[in-house]
Length: 121
Image 1 (cartoon, rainbow, N blue to C red):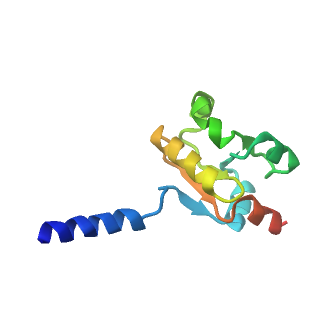
Image 2 (tube, helix red, strand yellow):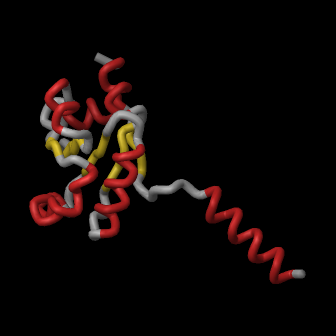
Image 3 (cartoon, rainbow, N blue to C red):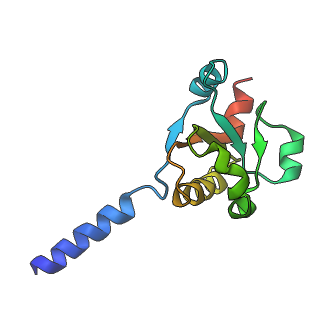
């Protein structure tokens, strides 16, 4: 009985944890950091047509579906702060997981993603 209870407790803890380990950053925090000398690397993980329709100034486009193919190019940013965004958070979360699995440790997700950025303009 104790083993079953322990297993169920562990399962509950795992299922209630977020699907990504990355921290988050608000739009206001990002704006402040962008105006500082230590501006983060901003990566837009949406598709090209979405990026071309509008993006955060200075953002690099690396579509989430191809992020594993761009790890060599992103390697130069491995020690930098990185902020990821998309439209809903799903693609940014998947990209954060891929980067963290590749050894990137300073990955954050933009709260509210691109719609929050647009609303704050």
